[in-house]
Amino acid sequence: GMAIWTKRRKRKIQAKTRVVAGAIAGALAGCVTTAALHPIDTVKTQMQLQSRGYCSPMHGPLHCFLTLMKAKGFASVYAGFRAAAGGAMISSALYFGAYEWAKTALPLDWPGRMAIAAVIGNAVSSTMLVPKELIKQRLQAGATGGAFYVARTALQRDGIRGLYVGYGTTLLRNAPSNAINFSLFEWIKARRLERTQKPALAPWESFLAGLTSGGCSSFLTTPMDVAKTRLMTQQSARSSLQLRASGLLVTLATVAREDGPLGLYRGAVPRAVHGAAFGALGFLAFETCKRALLVRMSTRLAEVDAQHHLVVRP
Image (cartoon, rainbow, N blue to C red):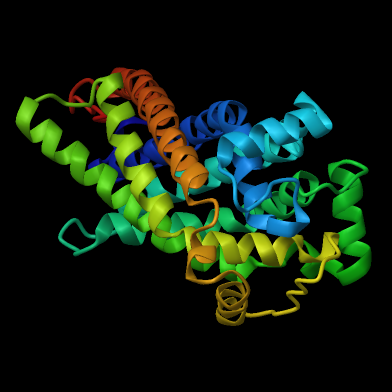
């Protein structure tokens, strides 16, 4: 037993511990943030639908929210919530687990290490994120029958590819968004810890750092999100604006031609608000849960080999 308890093995266990803690904390963070912020996401989707949605492009997010409430009731702002919450837990677990693994696996001196880790996490989690987003947004756009019906319809019409409409666009949207979000968060975190000389951020510090990084990254990548929304909802709506484009650039060009350059930033305010709140709540939940899990796991590992004082730092 103890003879094979080598330093190398302990490093592997330490790395696996961070991945497991990250995945569990990510799932909890995904559930919390989705429950709190789904109405804002619904408003953003309706604004991006323009003439196909309930919201006039001439009015703002608050008017859109009140219009939805008046037309379809409170349940309308939580359309697609079950699909979003279930998918968010799985995709967030995949994302943060892969992110923590990549942070451990990549050399410490690599430039852009955090951004690369974020992109790896995005690539892994998108296998679950894209079908979840597609089902959620079609329900938000007015599709009926529930999540399983929407998924079955997409599968019957186009096969497995039907659930991955907009997959490339989602990767192109999320890769820069996540790279900006996580790099900025980690930079703020590192500067704050350097200044305070503490081992971890306080909850309110995680909240503010996530608020800043999430809002900035979401606003800057709104054009990609507009294109993704149009692609994912085009098959569930009929309108004069027929976007049959399969490519990101063609979709962006079509939106710019139909709505002007500002059309690429339609829904930017609710998206930035959603991103800021998502970042604040998400990083608060993630950092708090991860720290608690790592402290507990490191205590158990320390008991296994007190001689080496194995401690997994949060």
